[in-house]
Length: 212
Image (cartoon, rainbow, N blue to C red; front, top):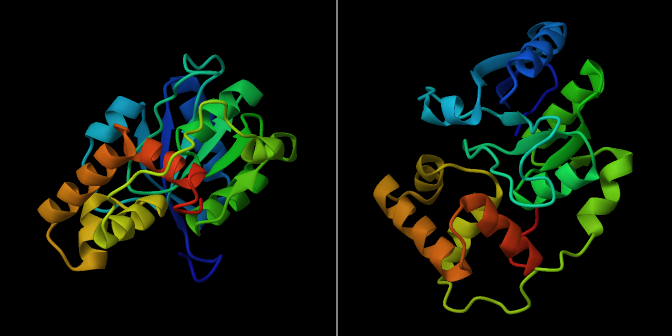
């Protein structure tokens, strides 16, 4: 969480389209020293890189025709909340289900984009007015039963997952080893019946276990 708007936002930019990456990088560079770009590339390139520290926020451009629109999108899991740029409502629903904390259209201007990035970095949710209804729209496939057997420690881990923390950050917050943190994360995923961290947070939110 940032204490002051004067503090630069550490940003990782994820976009499959190199032209979109270039345009976003230029737009954000126009904001001066307000943004520090820690990494930029495709999802595979960014996930395989080893930055010294997690960014404050991830800007994820899902593309003009994302393969997962209306289906399954793979959101970046980089230990930070995600702001997704989407072309339409269908892609917005997919990005939200994948765990995005905020949704804006891809043609957003630089100034409101920076304001949204700061808000998401603080743990807030940000939606374009035309996409606001998505956050209140029930999903037809939403589970109705509550997973059983989550231990108090696993509930703590789940809460930290909802904050977008990495295994290392969870370990530091709970004063446990990174190996133990990973063990608890895997246990949470198994008990929630999901395979990805973002899916766990989305399902837990639907069940009222966490707030995103």
